[in-house]
Amino acid sequence: MTASKKNKIILDSEALEIRKKLIEAASKGETLTYSDLVSDDDDRHMGKLSKTLARISCYERNEDRPFLCALVVQKATGVPSTGFFMLCDDLGIDHDLEDLQRECFEYWGENKK
Image 1 (spheres, rainbow, N blue to C red):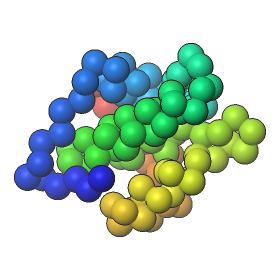
Image 2 (image 1 turned 90 degrees about the vertical axis):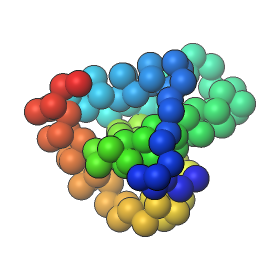
Image 3 (image 1 turned 120 degrees about the vertical axis):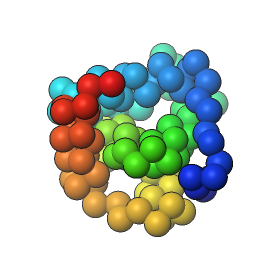
Image 4 (image 1 turned 120 degrees about the horizontal axis):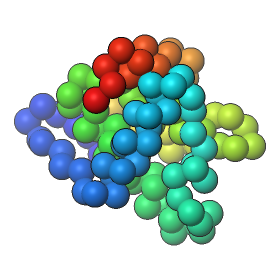
C-alpha cells in the first residue's frame, strides 16, 4: 500500500479506535503489543490488524505525522513483526525503530490530538 498526498485515506471506526490507542500510548511514551489491540490472537484477526496498521500509517504519513505503527511490538521480542519492516521498505521509510518511536513520543507528547 502506498500513500500519496493525492489519495485521501479514510479510516473506518475500527481504525480510528486503534489510532486513538496508539496516540494515547505515544503521548505516554509507551509501546503496545499486537495483543493489546486485538482481543483474539487468531491469525485472521492479526492479519486484519496488520492491514489496519498499514492504513493508519499511510494516513499519518499523508498528514506528515510520525509512523504510529512503530509503537506496536511483539510481546516476545519487543520489536514489530516483519510486516512493519516490509511496509517501511514499501514507503521508503528508514526503519530505525528507536528513531521512529522517539518521533512518535515527541510529536504526540506535545500534540495531543
